[in-house]
Length: 330
Ligand SMILES: NC(=O)c1ccc[n+]([C@@H]2O[C@H](COP(=O)([O-])OP(=O)(O)OC[C@H]3O[C@@H](n4cnc5c(N)ncnc54)[C@H](O)[C@@H]3O)[C@@H](O)[C@H]2O)c1
Image (cartoon, rainbow, N blue to C red; front, top):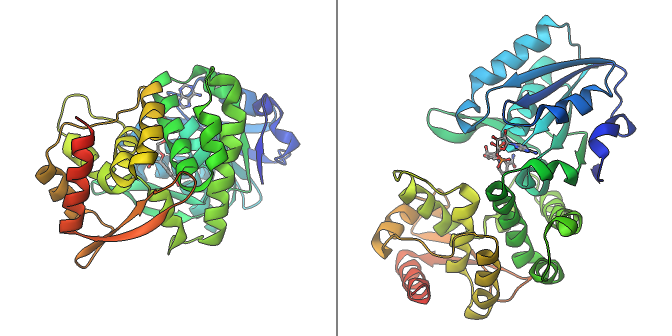
Protein backbone atom coordinates (compact mmCIF):
# COMPACT_ATOMS: atom_id res chain seq x y z
CA UNK A 1 0.00 0.00 0.00
CA UNK A 2 1.14 3.51 -0.72
CA UNK A 3 -0.11 6.50 1.27
CA UNK A 4 0.51 10.10 0.27
CA UNK A 5 -0.50 12.45 3.08
CA UNK A 6 0.94 15.62 4.57
CA UNK A 7 1.95 15.13 8.19
CA UNK A 8 1.93 11.32 7.82
CA UNK A 9 5.50 10.98 9.12
CA UNK A 10 4.31 11.77 12.66
CA UNK A 11 1.48 9.22 12.46
CA UNK A 12 3.10 6.19 10.88
CA UNK A 13 1.60 3.74 13.39
CA UNK A 14 -1.67 4.36 11.53
CA UNK A 15 -0.23 2.24 8.72
CA UNK A 16 2.67 0.33 10.27
CA UNK A 17 2.26 -2.03 13.26
CA UNK A 18 4.85 -0.57 15.65
CA UNK A 19 4.22 -2.72 18.75
CA UNK A 20 7.47 -4.62 18.14
CA UNK A 21 11.15 -3.83 17.63
CA UNK A 22 11.63 -1.33 14.82
CA UNK A 23 14.96 -0.27 13.34
CA UNK A 24 14.70 3.18 11.74
CA UNK A 25 17.48 3.50 9.16
CA UNK A 26 18.45 6.96 7.93
CA UNK A 27 21.54 8.82 6.72
CA UNK A 28 23.45 11.81 8.05
CA UNK A 29 22.06 14.18 5.40
CA UNK A 30 18.40 13.56 6.20
CA UNK A 31 17.21 16.10 8.80
CA UNK A 32 17.07 14.04 12.00
CA UNK A 33 13.61 15.36 12.87
CA UNK A 34 12.14 12.90 10.33
CA UNK A 35 13.69 9.83 11.98
CA UNK A 36 12.67 11.29 15.34
CA UNK A 37 9.06 11.68 14.19
CA UNK A 38 8.97 8.00 13.19
CA UNK A 39 10.74 6.89 16.37
CA UNK A 40 8.10 8.82 18.32
CA UNK A 41 5.56 6.26 17.07
CA UNK A 42 7.74 3.24 17.97
CA UNK A 43 7.85 2.27 21.69
CA UNK A 44 10.68 -0.18 20.92
CA UNK A 45 12.44 1.98 18.35
CA UNK A 46 16.14 1.83 17.47
CA UNK A 47 17.93 4.14 15.08
CA UNK A 48 20.76 3.38 12.66
CA UNK A 49 22.37 6.38 10.96
CA UNK A 50 24.99 5.95 8.24
CA UNK A 51 27.05 8.53 6.37
CA UNK A 52 25.10 10.18 3.51
CA UNK A 53 25.99 9.80 -0.17
CA UNK A 54 26.13 7.26 -2.96
CA UNK A 55 29.68 6.27 -1.84
CA UNK A 56 28.10 4.68 1.22
CA UNK A 57 25.66 2.54 -0.71
CA UNK A 58 27.88 -0.45 -0.01
CA UNK A 59 27.85 -3.97 1.39
CA UNK A 60 29.77 -2.61 4.35
CA UNK A 61 26.89 -0.27 5.23
CA UNK A 62 24.48 -3.20 4.93
CA UNK A 63 26.77 -5.32 7.14
CA UNK A 64 26.67 -2.66 9.89
CA UNK A 65 22.89 -2.52 9.77
CA UNK A 66 22.73 -6.32 10.01
CA UNK A 67 25.10 -6.24 12.99
CA UNK A 68 22.90 -3.65 14.66
CA UNK A 69 19.80 -5.80 14.10
CA UNK A 70 21.53 -8.88 15.50
CA UNK A 71 23.07 -7.12 18.50
CA UNK A 72 19.69 -5.70 19.45
CA UNK A 73 17.98 -9.08 19.22
CA UNK A 74 15.72 -8.38 16.23
CA UNK A 75 13.64 -11.42 15.27
CA UNK A 76 11.74 -12.39 12.17
CA UNK A 77 8.63 -10.63 13.45
CA UNK A 78 10.37 -7.25 13.86
CA UNK A 79 10.73 -4.53 11.24
CA UNK A 80 13.00 -2.08 9.41
CA UNK A 81 11.79 1.39 8.35
CA UNK A 82 13.83 3.44 5.87
CA UNK A 83 13.59 7.20 6.40
CA UNK A 84 15.47 9.02 3.65
CA UNK A 85 16.16 9.21 -0.05
CA UNK A 86 16.86 6.50 -2.59
CA UNK A 87 20.19 5.56 -1.02
CA UNK A 88 18.61 4.86 2.37
CA UNK A 89 15.71 2.97 0.79
CA UNK A 90 17.97 0.78 -1.33
CA UNK A 91 20.38 -0.03 1.51
CA UNK A 92 17.79 -0.54 4.27
CA UNK A 93 15.55 -2.59 1.96
CA UNK A 94 18.43 -4.86 1.05
CA UNK A 95 19.39 -5.32 4.72
CA UNK A 96 15.76 -6.17 5.53
CA UNK A 97 15.62 -8.62 2.62
CA UNK A 98 18.50 -10.72 3.93
CA UNK A 99 18.21 -10.44 7.72
CA UNK A 100 16.79 -13.83 8.81
CA UNK A 101 15.90 -14.36 5.13
CA UNK A 102 13.68 -11.30 5.16
CA UNK A 103 11.92 -9.20 7.80
CA UNK A 104 9.17 -6.64 7.31
CA UNK A 105 10.36 -3.57 5.44
CA UNK A 106 8.63 -0.17 5.27
CA UNK A 107 9.74 2.87 3.33
CA UNK A 108 9.24 6.51 4.29
CA UNK A 109 10.91 8.30 1.36
CA UNK A 110 11.99 11.90 1.93
CA UNK A 111 13.34 13.07 -1.46
CA UNK A 112 11.08 13.72 -4.44
CA UNK A 113 13.01 11.14 -6.48
CA UNK A 114 12.47 8.47 -3.88
CA UNK A 115 8.81 9.46 -3.44
CA UNK A 116 7.94 9.19 -7.13
CA UNK A 117 10.32 6.46 -8.15
CA UNK A 118 12.74 4.44 -6.02
CA UNK A 119 10.43 3.68 -3.07
CA UNK A 120 8.17 1.49 -5.17
CA UNK A 121 8.96 -1.40 -7.42
CA UNK A 122 10.85 -3.44 -4.84
CA UNK A 123 14.37 -2.91 -6.16
CA UNK A 124 16.87 -2.84 -3.32
CA UNK A 125 20.63 -3.15 -3.33
CA UNK A 126 24.08 -1.63 -3.24
CA UNK A 127 26.92 -0.64 -5.53
CA UNK A 128 29.81 -3.09 -5.76
CA UNK A 129 33.12 -3.26 -7.61
CA UNK A 130 32.49 0.15 -9.14
CA UNK A 131 29.16 -0.96 -10.64
CA UNK A 132 25.91 0.71 -9.52
CA UNK A 133 23.19 -1.46 -7.98
CA UNK A 134 24.90 -4.69 -9.02
CA UNK A 135 24.21 -6.56 -5.78
CA UNK A 136 20.63 -6.61 -4.59
CA UNK A 137 17.24 -8.20 -4.39
CA UNK A 138 13.66 -7.55 -5.39
CA UNK A 139 12.02 -7.02 -2.00
CA UNK A 140 8.70 -5.20 -1.73
CA UNK A 141 8.07 -2.77 1.12
CA UNK A 142 4.91 -3.69 3.05
CA UNK A 143 3.87 -0.02 3.11
CA UNK A 144 5.23 3.17 1.59
CA UNK A 145 4.31 6.29 3.55
CA UNK A 146 4.91 9.53 1.64
CA UNK A 147 4.75 12.87 3.41
CA UNK A 148 5.18 15.72 0.89
CA UNK A 149 5.94 18.11 3.77
CA UNK A 150 9.35 16.40 4.10
CA UNK A 151 10.33 18.01 0.81
CA UNK A 152 10.39 21.47 2.42
CA UNK A 153 13.97 20.88 3.63
CA UNK A 154 15.25 19.42 0.37
CA UNK A 155 17.83 21.29 -1.69
CA UNK A 156 16.00 22.86 -4.70
CA UNK A 157 18.38 21.16 -7.14
CA UNK A 158 17.43 17.76 -5.69
CA UNK A 159 13.75 18.72 -5.76
CA UNK A 160 14.01 19.57 -9.44
CA UNK A 161 15.94 16.37 -10.15
CA UNK A 162 13.01 14.43 -8.69
CA UNK A 163 10.60 16.54 -10.70
CA UNK A 164 12.48 15.48 -13.85
CA UNK A 165 11.47 11.88 -13.03
CA UNK A 166 7.82 12.88 -12.74
CA UNK A 167 8.03 14.83 -16.01
CA UNK A 168 9.61 11.77 -17.63
CA UNK A 169 6.78 9.50 -16.51
CA UNK A 170 4.08 11.99 -17.50
CA UNK A 171 5.65 12.49 -20.93
CA UNK A 172 5.41 8.78 -21.76
CA UNK A 173 2.21 7.84 -19.98
CA UNK A 174 -0.09 10.63 -18.79
CA UNK A 175 -0.79 13.69 -20.92
CA UNK A 176 -3.04 15.31 -18.30
CA UNK A 177 -0.36 15.02 -15.61
CA UNK A 178 2.12 16.60 -18.03
CA UNK A 179 -0.27 19.51 -18.62
CA UNK A 180 -0.75 19.86 -14.87
CA UNK A 181 3.02 20.11 -14.32
CA UNK A 182 3.16 22.68 -17.14
CA UNK A 183 0.60 24.94 -15.41
CA UNK A 184 1.93 28.24 -14.15
CA UNK A 185 2.28 28.88 -10.44
CA UNK A 186 4.37 27.66 -7.55
CA UNK A 187 5.34 24.00 -7.42
CA UNK A 188 4.94 23.32 -3.70
CA UNK A 189 1.12 23.23 -3.46
CA UNK A 190 0.98 21.04 -6.59
CA UNK A 191 3.39 18.40 -5.29
CA UNK A 192 0.74 16.04 -3.90
CA UNK A 193 -0.98 15.65 -7.26
CA UNK A 194 2.37 15.31 -9.06
CA UNK A 195 3.51 12.61 -6.63
CA UNK A 196 0.28 10.61 -6.81
CA UNK A 197 0.18 10.92 -10.61
CA UNK A 198 3.76 9.75 -11.08
CA UNK A 199 3.29 6.95 -8.54
CA UNK A 200 0.23 5.69 -10.37
CA UNK A 201 2.28 5.42 -13.56
CA UNK A 202 5.19 3.66 -11.87
CA UNK A 203 2.86 1.30 -10.02
CA UNK A 204 1.01 0.32 -13.19
CA UNK A 205 4.26 -0.33 -15.00
CA UNK A 206 5.77 -2.33 -12.13
CA UNK A 207 2.61 -4.42 -11.72
CA UNK A 208 2.62 -5.25 -15.42
CA UNK A 209 6.32 -6.11 -15.42
CA UNK A 210 7.61 -6.80 -11.90
CA UNK A 211 11.00 -8.24 -12.91
CA UNK A 212 11.82 -5.70 -15.61
CA UNK A 213 11.54 -7.97 -18.61
CA UNK A 214 9.63 -5.69 -20.98
CA UNK A 215 7.24 -2.80 -20.33
CA UNK A 216 9.21 -1.54 -17.33
CA UNK A 217 11.79 -0.29 -19.80
CA UNK A 218 9.44 2.62 -20.52
CA UNK A 219 10.87 4.10 -17.32
CA UNK A 220 14.14 4.35 -19.24
CA UNK A 221 12.89 7.26 -21.37
CA UNK A 222 15.84 9.66 -21.60
CA UNK A 223 18.32 7.07 -20.36
CA UNK A 224 19.93 6.01 -23.65
CA UNK A 225 21.60 9.36 -24.30
CA UNK A 226 21.25 10.43 -20.65
CA UNK A 227 23.62 7.66 -19.54
CA UNK A 228 26.06 8.73 -22.26
CA UNK A 229 25.93 12.34 -21.00
CA UNK A 230 26.41 11.07 -17.43
CA UNK A 231 29.41 8.96 -18.41
CA UNK A 232 30.93 11.72 -20.54
CA UNK A 233 30.54 14.34 -17.78
CA UNK A 234 31.87 12.04 -15.06
CA UNK A 235 35.37 13.48 -15.25
CA UNK A 236 34.43 17.14 -15.06
CA UNK A 237 34.61 19.19 -11.86
CA UNK A 238 30.88 19.50 -11.31
CA UNK A 239 29.17 16.40 -12.72
CA UNK A 240 25.50 16.57 -13.42
CA UNK A 241 23.11 14.58 -11.26
CA UNK A 242 21.67 11.42 -12.79
CA UNK A 243 18.19 12.95 -13.17
CA UNK A 244 19.65 16.02 -14.87
CA UNK A 245 21.38 13.81 -17.45
CA UNK A 246 18.12 11.96 -18.03
CA UNK A 247 16.35 15.32 -18.48
CA UNK A 248 18.79 16.34 -21.21
CA UNK A 249 18.63 12.81 -22.65
CA UNK A 250 14.83 12.95 -23.10
CA UNK A 251 15.18 15.77 -25.62
CA UNK A 252 17.11 13.45 -27.96
CA UNK A 253 14.32 10.90 -28.08
CA UNK A 254 11.22 12.91 -28.88
CA UNK A 255 9.45 14.59 -31.77
CA UNK A 256 9.76 18.32 -32.46
CA UNK A 257 6.26 18.87 -31.08
CA UNK A 258 7.16 17.14 -27.80
CA UNK A 259 10.44 19.01 -27.61
CA UNK A 260 8.54 22.31 -27.96
CA UNK A 261 6.73 21.55 -24.68
CA UNK A 262 9.41 19.59 -22.84
CA UNK A 263 12.26 22.04 -23.26
CA UNK A 264 10.58 25.11 -21.67
CA UNK A 265 9.35 22.94 -18.81
CA UNK A 266 12.85 21.63 -18.08
CA UNK A 267 14.26 25.16 -18.33
CA UNK A 268 11.70 26.45 -15.82
CA UNK A 269 13.13 24.10 -13.22
CA UNK A 270 16.78 24.77 -14.11
CA UNK A 271 17.15 21.31 -15.65
CA UNK A 272 19.67 20.98 -18.49
CA UNK A 273 18.34 21.06 -22.05
CA UNK A 274 21.66 20.62 -23.81
CA UNK A 275 25.09 19.12 -23.24
CA UNK A 276 28.57 20.08 -24.39
CA UNK A 277 29.53 16.71 -25.91
CA UNK A 278 30.03 16.09 -29.63
CA UNK A 279 28.15 13.42 -31.55
CA UNK A 280 31.03 10.92 -31.63
CA UNK A 281 31.68 11.16 -27.88
CA UNK A 282 28.01 10.54 -27.10
CA UNK A 283 27.82 7.68 -29.61
CA UNK A 284 30.85 5.98 -28.10
CA UNK A 285 29.13 5.91 -24.72
CA UNK A 286 25.75 4.93 -26.18
CA UNK A 287 27.52 1.97 -27.81
CA UNK A 288 28.60 0.77 -24.40
CA UNK A 289 25.11 1.10 -22.99
CA UNK A 290 23.99 -2.10 -21.35
CA UNK A 291 20.71 -1.99 -23.25
CA UNK A 292 22.57 -2.60 -26.50
CA UNK A 293 21.45 -5.97 -27.80
CA UNK A 294 23.52 -7.21 -30.71
CA UNK A 295 23.90 -4.40 -33.20
CA UNK A 296 20.84 -2.40 -32.14
CA UNK A 297 19.74 -0.41 -29.12
CA UNK A 298 16.16 -0.21 -27.91
CA UNK A 299 15.34 3.37 -27.00
CA UNK A 300 12.10 4.79 -25.64
CA UNK A 301 10.80 7.45 -28.06
CA UNK A 302 7.99 9.93 -27.38
CA UNK A 303 6.20 11.13 -30.48
CA UNK A 304 3.23 12.62 -28.66
CA UNK A 305 2.96 13.57 -24.98
CA UNK A 306 1.36 10.74 -22.99
CA UNK A 307 2.47 7.93 -25.30
CA UNK A 308 5.69 6.14 -26.22
CA UNK A 309 7.18 3.54 -28.50
CA UNK A 310 10.19 1.28 -28.23
CA UNK A 311 12.49 2.02 -31.17
CA UNK A 312 15.18 -0.43 -32.21
CA UNK A 313 17.99 1.69 -33.58
CA UNK A 314 21.26 0.68 -35.13
CA UNK A 315 24.28 2.88 -34.54
CA UNK A 316 23.75 4.82 -37.76
CA UNK A 317 20.13 5.60 -36.88
CA UNK A 318 21.29 6.61 -33.42
CA UNK A 319 23.90 8.91 -34.97
CA UNK A 320 21.25 10.58 -37.15
CA UNK A 321 18.96 10.99 -34.17
CA UNK A 322 21.72 12.61 -32.09
CA UNK A 323 22.74 14.89 -34.99
CA UNK A 324 19.11 16.02 -35.48
CA UNK A 325 18.68 16.92 -31.87
CA UNK A 326 22.14 18.46 -31.52
CA UNK A 327 21.16 20.90 -34.26
CA UNK A 328 17.98 21.77 -32.32
CA UNK A 329 20.16 22.71 -29.33
CA UNK A 330 21.78 25.56 -31.29
N1 LIG B 1 15.35 1.20 -6.14
C1 LIG B 1 15.01 1.85 -7.22
O1 LIG B 1 14.09 1.47 -7.97
C2 LIG B 1 15.72 3.12 -7.56
C3 LIG B 1 15.23 3.96 -8.59
C4 LIG B 1 15.90 5.16 -8.83
C5 LIG B 1 17.01 5.50 -8.09
N2 LIG B 1 17.46 4.65 -7.12
C6 LIG B 1 18.63 5.00 -6.31
O2 LIG B 1 18.31 6.14 -5.53
C7 LIG B 1 19.51 6.83 -5.20
C8 LIG B 1 19.29 8.31 -5.41
O3 LIG B 1 18.24 8.71 -4.56
P1 LIG B 1 18.09 10.22 -4.07
O4 LIG B 1 18.14 11.11 -5.25
O5 LIG B 1 16.92 10.26 -3.17
O6 LIG B 1 19.48 10.49 -3.33
P2 LIG B 1 19.94 10.34 -1.81
O7 LIG B 1 19.27 9.26 -1.12
O8 LIG B 1 21.44 10.31 -1.84
O9 LIG B 1 19.47 11.73 -1.20
C9 LIG B 1 20.05 12.91 -1.64
C10 LIG B 1 20.54 13.77 -0.47
O10 LIG B 1 19.41 14.36 0.14
C11 LIG B 1 19.46 14.15 1.55
N3 LIG B 1 18.07 14.17 1.98
C12 LIG B 1 17.16 13.16 1.92
N4 LIG B 1 15.95 13.60 2.29
C13 LIG B 1 16.08 14.90 2.62
C14 LIG B 1 15.17 15.91 3.06
N5 LIG B 1 13.86 15.67 3.20
N6 LIG B 1 15.65 17.14 3.32
C15 LIG B 1 16.98 17.42 3.12
N7 LIG B 1 17.87 16.53 2.69
C16 LIG B 1 17.43 15.28 2.44
C17 LIG B 1 20.22 12.86 1.72
O11 LIG B 1 20.80 12.77 2.99
C18 LIG B 1 21.26 12.97 0.62
O12 LIG B 1 22.36 13.73 1.05
C19 LIG B 1 20.60 6.24 -6.08
O13 LIG B 1 21.43 5.42 -5.31
C20 LIG B 1 19.84 5.41 -7.10
O14 LIG B 1 20.57 4.29 -7.56
C21 LIG B 1 16.84 3.48 -6.85
